[in-house]
Length: 221
Image (tube, rainbow, N blue to C red; front, side):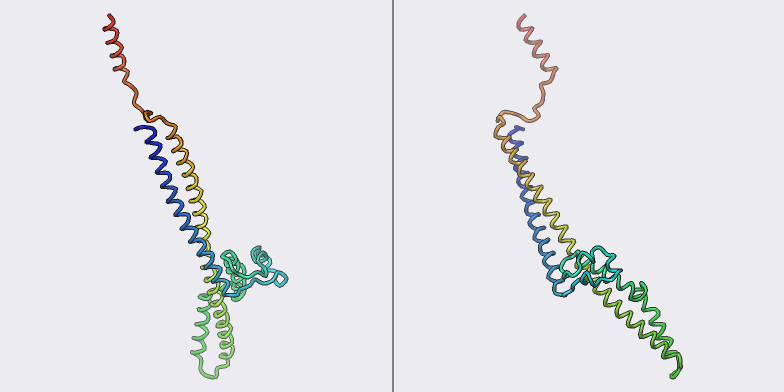
């Protein structure tokens, strides 16, 4: 194959691949912008604001991100992660000694069963009822906190896809630009290359060369 033809083929393929990468970059940029805008809109509607720095408790001040976002409105995925894990998560641990909504369900059901098994007017019922009321209040608080925490972490996860999409778009744009430059260099080389130049032309066999030289000697003699 001629060298000029090979250069043109590779350069044309490079341009085509660069076009595909450009399209990929545009699609990923669109997805990234949608994810970031959607997360911001949804979080802004919740009207959640971090506690001001001067009102943070000693435990809350132990979190670097809570201190960083103190007093700010919650509008980004990273803020949602911080609020869910370092703010809500901290308060949930102190609500029932680290127990979860599911954990509280066991003693709550046991207290109900004990009350139901006692006769009316039993003197232990008021104490059990107070215990059941406290457990129910704790479980409701945990349910609300864990639900909000899960929703915020879902928003954070969605925002991560947007960030990754932006990173993929950046790589695609860079690779596309590189391929365009290499393709232009290939076209330029093709224009400077002679039309007769062959790529990887096979060498003339040594045996045939020796035979031709021998025949020339015989002719001279």
